[in-house]
Length: 382
Image 1 (cartoon, one colour):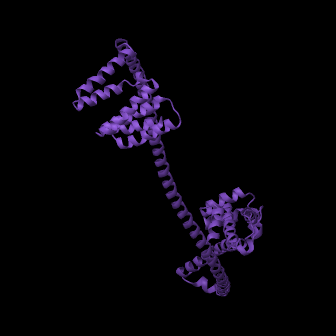
Image 2 (cartoon, rainbow, N blue to C red):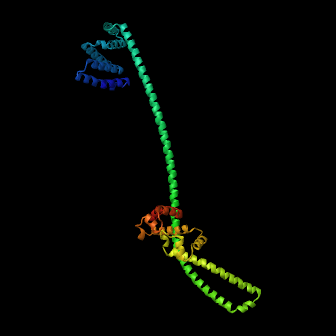
Image 3 (cartoon, one colour):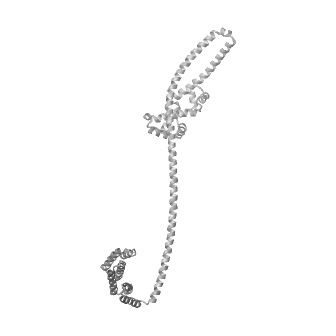
């Protein structure tokens, strides 16, 4: 059946040479496997039609004869009436009207002997109506399936559009997030560099400040000696001062007032120097219980004066002032991998005086601008 159908397809496509080749293979297969005569006769019929289309009368007549002989041999002429009609058409075309009339008569006689023509036509019409109804139903089902297919395609198309839009939106958002992350990373790098350079410069400034304080103390000692000398001179020359004119007396009074003010300023400076000395040269602020009272005790003053000096000179509270020293020392210890490379961030936070790691992170981020973990990571990369 596959070969026979394939031959019919070639015949319908007017590819008669291919049709003949395939149909011959079908005949051989049917004969070899002893198939029923309908298969052989059907193949013969398509073969002579293919040769007729090729205008090969000799081969056409050969397969018409084989078709007729096989049909007569197996008694299936009722299914092969077309062979007589094909004979009649052929002889009519070659103007052999005698043979043409002969085969037309055979066709009609055989047809009448098999089935009454009118009954045949009635049955054929009924069959036609049935086939048409069946095909109408089939076509209707095809239309319904086509509608369902189009609806599915439309749904899939809309789904693809939605997915595409979502992918585009996500891509745009990812690009925006990436650019923002890059900008934030750049800002963090700038903060890290600024803080790192600030700590380095601060160390240099501390060294210079210590040198300046040493020189200042020498100058203060020299000034103190000069003041004592001036005071002794003033006492020995008290009578001359009494005799001086009013302008000179006013000058001396102003000098005494300025000296008194310098003494008050000297006391504040000494207290400030003591505070800075404790913060710079000791690690008292690394204790958990380091407080304003403890600092006051260490510098030999009271809490009120210490707080006032810190606020006036640094414009910040005691807590902020101490926390900045702790954060500064934490940064130095994070960069000192030789001594503190094995320390965790929590251990470093405890070593500089923070009771909890969360408080350390909050103060570090507020002071430096980035988290301690990010700062340590950038130190490692650098």
